[in-house]
Every structure is written in structure tokens, then in C-alpha cells.
Amino acid sequence: MSRRLEITMAANEGALIRVLGTVERRGYSLSTLHVEKTDNNMQVSMQIESDRDANILCRQLDRLFDVQSVNLEAQLEAVLDSAEFNETPRFQASWL
Image (cartoon, rainbow, N blue to C red; front, side, top):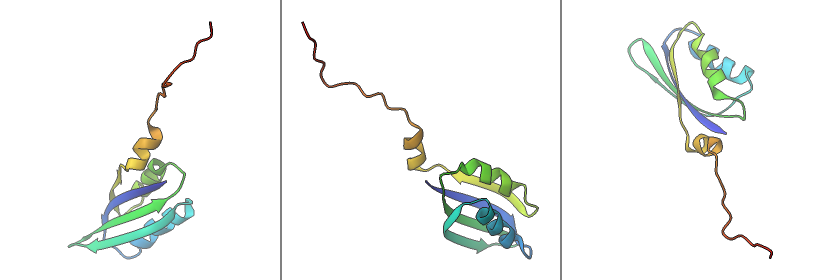
């Protein structure tokens, strides 16, 4: 499943490496990465691929020293995967 993370973090030496190392060591595959540096902060946007729960990764990243916030964007796939579909038959045959 593909998920998108938005991370705000301090622009300190080694901060980005710690974030990327955490993602890799926890078994998530990074498919895209976009980093923008503002005054003293960095905005990191990444797309990850995994069957693991992305909320766990968000909590782990949020514990890192330079990370200020982590947001997990909802994906349509995730909504469809968690939805329960009640299939009703189109017709019913009854035997007399």
C-alpha cells in the first residue's frame, strides 16, 4: 500500500539522514522524496510503500529529536481497503 507522509523538521546537520534511516530500518520502501528548506526548517514530503501500518512509522518519526510534526495523508486506497462492502445477491432462487 502506498502512503504519503508530510514531515516538518529542523534543518540541522544529520536530521534528514536520521529520518531516512528510520524509514529504511523499519522496513518501509521509499518511492518519492521532496525536500524544501525554509528559514530554519525543512518540509519533507515522501511516498512510502509497505503493507505495514504507517501510523507506527509516524509515531517513530515523531520521537526523533529534530522532527517537529508528522502528518499521514489519507489515500483513497486506504479508505477502500478498510471499507466493508455488503454484497447483496441480485437474485435469489427458491426451490418449492
